Amino acid sequence: MKPQDIEGVKQLLASPKKIAIIPHRNPDGDAMGSTLGLYHYLKLKGHEPTVITPNEFPDFLAWLPSSNTVKVFEKDTETSNKILSEAELIFTLDFNMLSRTGDQMEAALKKLQAPFIMIDHHQKPGDYAVYAFSDTSYGSTCEMIYHFIKGLGDGDIIDKTIASCLYTGIVTDSGSFRYPSTTGTTHRVVAEFIDKGIDNTAIHSLLFDNHSHNRVLILARALQNMKVLPAYKTSYTTLSQEELNSFGHTKGDTEGIVNYGLCMKDIEFTAMFTENKDEGIIKISFRSKGDFDVNQYAREHFSGGGHINAAGGKSTESLEATIQKFIATLAHTKID
Ligand code: 5GP
Ligand code: MN
Image: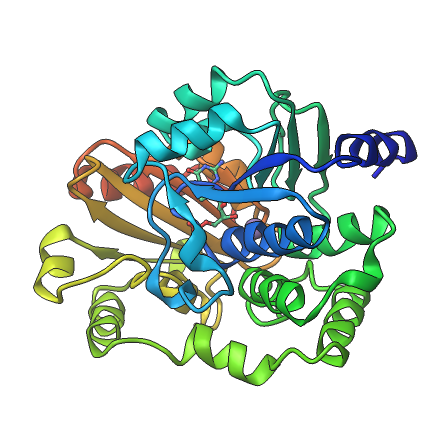
């Protein structure tokens, strides 16, 4: 954060304000942890914040403090639009293009006059924000929120509630501290959170040992569906809408499954294709080990983006046609 930007933000926050805080569509642990962490900080500072998610957040994040205050734009559109139009300041967290909120919410956001502040760690930020704290070297937006609050001179008021929210995104986006973006600083931030009293073991368990039996069956099906292409050091798996329906899936059930594709020796690249008939798309998740840049790959082939080792994209073709296209790209993709 540049000193003049910090001063600018301090001025914006100098008097109590109505503030909307927005994560990306299909919010994950980092999106929900960062928005709710910032929400609790702004409340402590006397503001009137509201988190508005574009669509519903998954059940496994419902334990996050004050998640019951979150408005869901695509469900409570009227209330959300009212809050947005009255907001004097808007934070967008864990994404950097308004299109990541979906067509409906993007259109609503584009009409607003209030200034935007972006805090995000994805590549290629858009230019809609007055202040953009955009840094791809951070493993999570939650870690950035910690530094943002500290930069504003308020490190001391980070309490157990804020720390529990921020710990969530640091853990989920770092794959429990195993991805390369995990730094000494990441561990020092978390050490501070533990000293502030967060129950790190309980939070980890709430996040990862909290699945329904159906979700385990969905994981089992995805593992059965997994294909390996040794010549390309690649694996991929699929979940059709019919399979998901047969297990009575709910939002969040497919979270994290893509990572299993990398657990094999000599596999450097993996993809998971999830059919979503409601939205008429195949949602794709990409993961890699080492230097193969899946953000670049997702941008080039599947209208997506993300980070070097974790990215997403989509396709409007059928599941079969999408797989065919994926396999065809591998012949001219260098995976090392
Ligand atoms: P996931 O595979 O868990 O959905 O996403 C992995 C990473 O890629 C996350 O950081 C997510 O924000 C990003 N991502 C997922 N889908 C898209 C997409 O369609 N466009 C862009 N730009 N980023 C995405
Ligand atoms: Mn993130």
